[in-house]
Length: 237
Image (cartoon, rainbow, N blue to C red):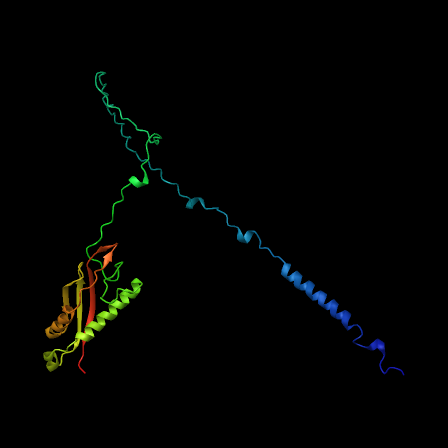
């Protein structure tokens, strides 16, 4: 079968070759355009310092007379006094810091240790052995004895509590802060009260006065005073 068109007349026969040749020429022209350098003529940029003679000014020479430098002051040398040979000169004796090997070292048993002063009064939360409420002696640990003290104190307040009639009639309520000190013999002293009314304070003082004799608190085996505080609340039903 014969082709319909003459292969010699096909326009796409050498299209790839023409494409590469054209691309090469375009790239060459772009390169030349980027690398092309031009220079200005030297005459247009001649910045010389040729100045007309009429414009040249001669600087005026000014002579300044400086004052003469000050003359150096002549200082009199200090007077040297020569001490006589008969004067006694005290010499400083420098003691040696070296340890004397012949010095006897004291024994540990002979050293007396100063005992720390035990305060006369120690707070309940800081004392080593807190006061013991009667009935709490059999508790094993210090923590249990403190818990028993708190519990017995609340039971004592509830057992002896009596609302004052005057306070009931007046409708008085409130909390009385009670502070007292367990003395070195276990007695109660230095009772301080703070409440909304005197009748409530008097009732709180009466309750505290009925406390039994306690076992005093101890610090390093020595009985000391121990302050303690507890609130008593008065509330009408």
